[in-house]
Length: 134
Image (tube, rainbow, N blue to C red; front, side, top):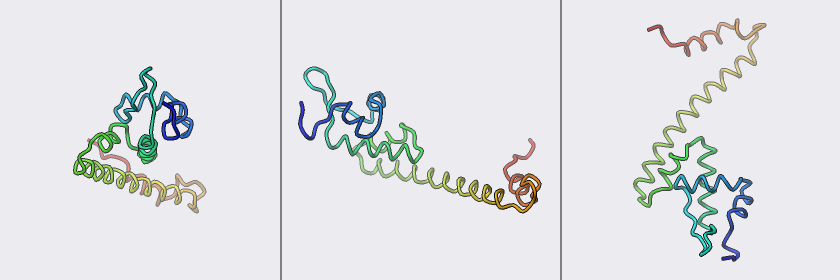
């Protein structure tokens, strides 16, 4: 099956700059389910192109394949929205944590002490990260 809207695994992987084994892995994980020719060769259509872009976006956001599957693996819009909400909460928490780390780095870089390890403000911030004794 060859047409302008059907892609082989090599063509589609190449389009996204991925090795073909990545698409096979995503198929095993239930994220892709390409139809096959009578000879058993996979072929992908426009919907698969969109799906791969969604998977890559999820990976760029730091989500696992299991988390991505929660969104893409259901036809239930309510379940999909619930999974998106959970991922939104997790992403917001990571952004908050990353912003705090970014601010700590900026302070360490701009610190007027000879060495940021001796900076009282930096040491107070660092102390907030040390768990209390048990």
